[in-house]
Length: 57
Image (cartoon, rainbow, N blue to C red; front, side, top):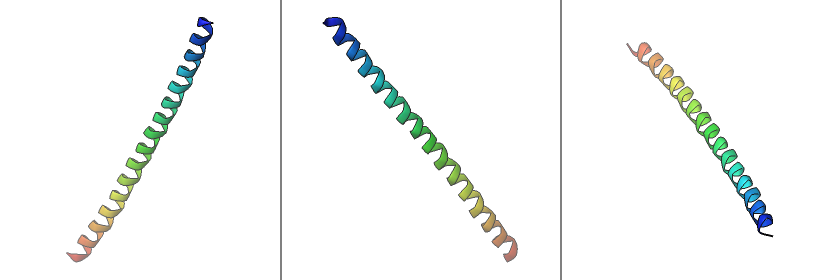
């Protein structure tokens, strides 16, 4: 009886840890995508800004 409860607790713990790990991975991927998008946007804006500055001078 006790071993059965222990095994169930272990299985639940493993499932929970797996869920947390997968969500953490998703979070990391999301942050990485966000950073990439922001940096590419900044590059675009800076290029446009530089072009405008060059035209102005």
